[in-house]
Length: 114
Image 1 (cartoon, helix red, strand yellow):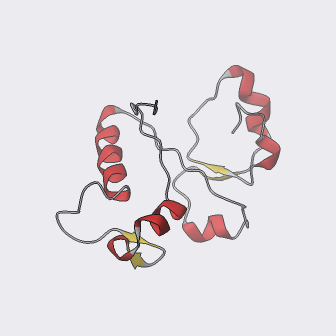
Image 2 (tube, rainbow, N blue to C red):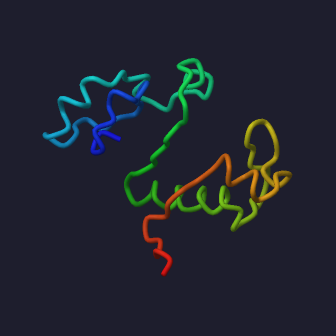
C-alpha cells in the first residue's frame, strides 16, 4: 500500500518490521500503528475499514506454517484435526464462491495464467 502511495487510505498497520525502505519512511510515519503484535479482529473492525489487507512474510520456518495455512484457506487441504473457522463458521460449510468473497491470497511462486 505504501509503494502505491496509499498511506492516506490506510487506517492502521501492525507488526511492522523494525525498518522500511528509506524511500517509504515518511509515508510509513503517517500510518497509525495498531499493535506491534497481531491485532485482534475486533480492533481492526473498530476502525471501520473498507477492507483489510493481510500480508504474512517471514523466515523459512514461518514460511512453512504460512504455506500450510494458505492451503487450508484455499481449501486445497483439509486439517488433520480440528476445524478452520471463518466468520465463526467452519470453513467447510461455505460454498467455494462464498469463501472466495471473503478470502484471497497470492502464492509467492504462483504462475500467472496465459
